[in-house]
Image 1 (cartoon, each protein chain N blue to C red):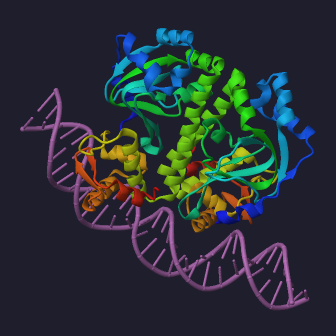
Image 2: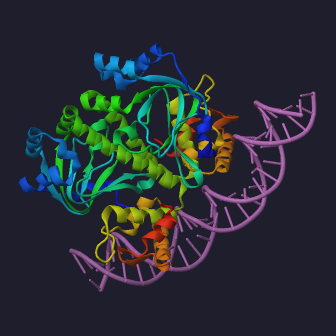
Image 3: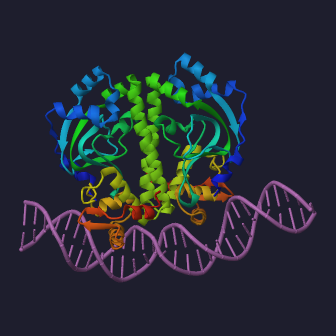
Length: 246
Length: 246
DNA sequence: CGTGTGATTGACGCCTGTCAACGTCTGTGG
DNA sequence: CCACAGACGTTGACAGGCGTCAATCACACG
């Protein structure tokens, strides 16, 4: 549980040689930007700023006003809220191609989450003026952003139902499956995202100790194998069954 | 807990004399429609269909494809998801001025929730073609819808954190405060929304019996008074304190 | 080698879900 | 007018899931 007060100590971003990296995002990676006109894309490439960040860096903090959003070019960003006693609740992870911080820009509210680098990342900064101007002037682009928001909203609603109705055991199994679906497995069937037990607990919404106990149960039941933060998925079907996923 | 199978029995909508009712929505009630041009508003008024529904009517069902959304002119609509064993999880209530079903339209997905009439309602139906056309062609309108979605998303994220971290007792107190803020109190400080104990439980994410027990605790602590489904708020501050709201 | 962070394990107990029984109220039909 | 059914509310008993606290271990790092 990291205290807010020290967050500024963790800033250490570096500007990235500008040109090539983001051109990729604008076209291949991300369906969002494919609707931009040539002129818009030029403006976009001209105005964006790419920065590199390392694990632990805070990109923005809950309740702060942010004046731009970020497109993740590489790495993983943890999006979370700080609840009672500073306990963090992880809302989602952003991976390459994802956009973070856009919610607050578009609704013109303060950030409702914090964003922290989980895996060294390169981020492209897009000013709120630029984003809003694109949304207002390009109907197809705004539809894409809208779809994104709606998709997130649908997922949030589903998660509310899960947390409210499922046991910790079921939720942990479900989280493992979701992580598998979102980040994939390497050649050894090991999850491509490494989380501390505490972080797992902060997704599931439980205590660290409970995660530890349940993970070893899963291990004993030959559903997973553990090696530090590396989790090897042995029986995805079994996990799905536990999670009540179909 | 009502079974899906019988849902169609509960349909009983009536067409409403078309003209006056919705003109109100388009202007005063709802900031969303204030950005429409004169022409758009005309088309809007021409194409919309107003229907009246009574308690228990189902407007749409989870996992179904819906080809339009509804603007609530009067009444209250319950938006919920069906979880394990058919237990319903209430996501939100829509009241006059709110729009329901737009998420699925905009993201082009199946409905992720069901909608059921809680209090006799008049709804205005807007076809998906109309909605999407407005979003694509009117930047200000699309910004308004976007804001709405983002606001809902922010609330959903906050709720995830609450459910994950707060006790049932805290959540119930918080729900009472939210209901007070959203639906207000009458001259006797009685909540202007009447819910069954089971429905309260399905918001909080707990068992009906737990709600009953906690409500009577609150009553003993002189925070509320109970009279059937009528809940009189005696000490909002006390409830806030219990809910950890600031 | 000391320090700090994260992982693990055990003990303990409360919150909360489940089950069961019963009370209350309303509407329906005989 | 009464009996009955059905929905909803209430209460009690009970068990167990899960959070909390505390102690210990493992490991990396300066």
